[in-house]
Image (cartoon, rainbow, N blue to C red; front, side):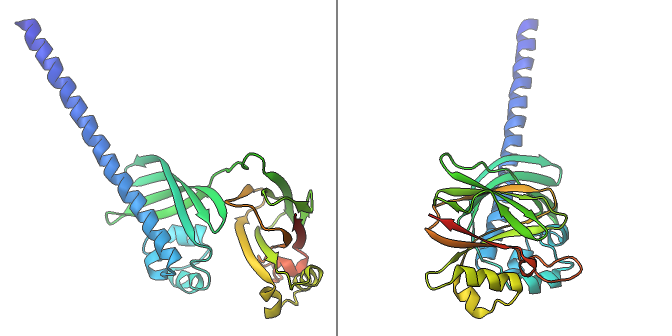
Length: 268
């Protein structure tokens, strides 16, 4: 009888533990869905150019540290100029972690034609998840892609090759002392690459300059010492391309391109 009672007690304890674990898994499952819903809603708001809805999903820390605005009002005005371009698509959600009212998740994403991986940190505010910070994660070049190494300094792009096939990736490093960005344009058939480069480097570009340039990709900003690999979802079209940095120079305020930070390369 004693063995039966002990066995029954052990069985009850085991069942209770299993039920508790199952409830915990269910709770985490609900929270994972809530975190994912917040991120997807923020992306939809971004793509639909809905500034107010997008800002409702982010914290003040995200606005200041990640987006670079000093206030929500400044963010509301500044985001209106570029929100939704390029559009964002999330492709995967993995490695959820929860600790109290904080959560992290690793998300695969596509911005325009650039493939990336980001770790988002979210916090609960008044019972709802809000995006608090984001960290870019390493992305490896796809098998068979030609990798072009690009070094950014004050104020120039240095490429280890000036031509590459369409199946290409860029390994970009900021070796300078200031922040930089990587903006890639394809020069249209009616554009003169050398003339466009001269206009960008002299700060004399105008509307006609950009009419001869098609936006392809953006990555950044890169803080000093940062490195990233820019990977595309498709081969780049053959033609001439311009690499440009528009970050304002410290002190002078002129865009880095006007100080010489623009370069040409060819996709074969």
